[in-house]
Image (cartoon, rainbow, N blue to C red; front, side, top):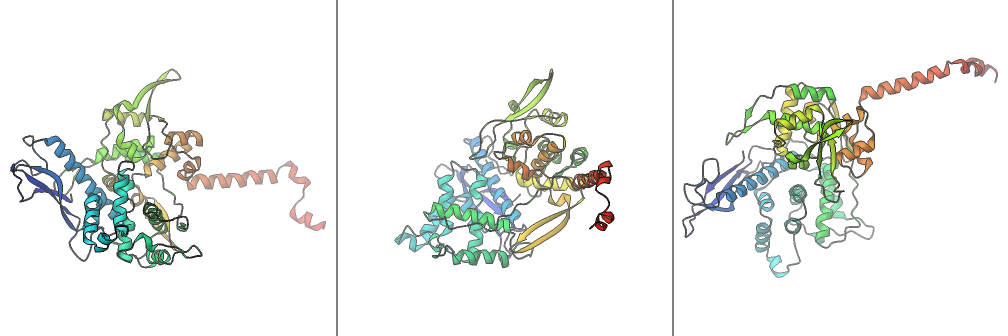
Length: 465
């Protein structure tokens, strides 16, 4: 694990010492080649010497040890999440950027102190400072994931031209911003990735433009001119029902994480993923499920377990989502007494790939991404592209293959728009080919039937002309 807690040498008057965090990510895709990827910073917690265990938790002898440990766990989880997101996006995460994410108020204050221009003219702010201020202003309304979405944008802006301000993004009379055009060209042609590849995919650039709109709007800038020309629809690859069963029946051998040697239960990840494939909630809803969310209802005279939850999605219909549990889903639910051991999204994605590979999910999948005007195609084994969100795509497709109509599926996954359900739904190649051949076979049958004789053959018809 990248986070280690230790006691600082500073001592307060009551003998307590501050608890600091030593965060390292030097070997991941988010690390810099130029220097050590490491951040040491205070956690805001303290305890007496000897009360901090080797596992980084305050013992029961410490004052308010339960609250302190909850805060330390939250701090550790946030640091791991930010590092995981940077690695997933293959963007460099600097210690300064991580500090701004963990402590936005402190980072904004430090940036204002270090910039003489901000002292003389408080209205002049860099995009990094605007980001920190935006996070602080919306912390009570937005999820942590949403609050961190602009991180990649800020990092790329600093790579492209450090110190950019909102006032720099001004369009000309034709409604084009030369600076933004140059930035997008840089992202397409020059932006480096940790894999060695150069140039971002169009959907990543699209996400940056959405984040830029948010920050510029927060800074009081007009954003009506900013048009996203890079958004592309991508298709998720769902599992077949046979693959879900194959995944579920594969033994989940346990492994240990490096660092503090905490055991990750692969069986837990396997069960949670399969449950997700059979019920379809978003990850955040999956995390929030509790034992009382499943109740037995009488359907056709038989008791049926039904999962009901209110989805955590801003600006969405807050009506409860209700899904009947299949025997396997209910078996998993009962195994954990309704308290599913859902790991972090990053851990889930990593372990699901390992389990999918062990289960033999190696069929070839073609992925297509846009890089500016280019199309980048890759053929990969299925286990390499599988992720936590694959389960939601799989649920939609499996329901359709089992005979459910689109409206029923839409209500079962909580989509506000049926077009979103259509985007999640993917037909299988074999089914498409079978339907195509069946259609032509039907046309051939009609063409060679009794009524066809009155029309004549192509040769006789041509001869009468």
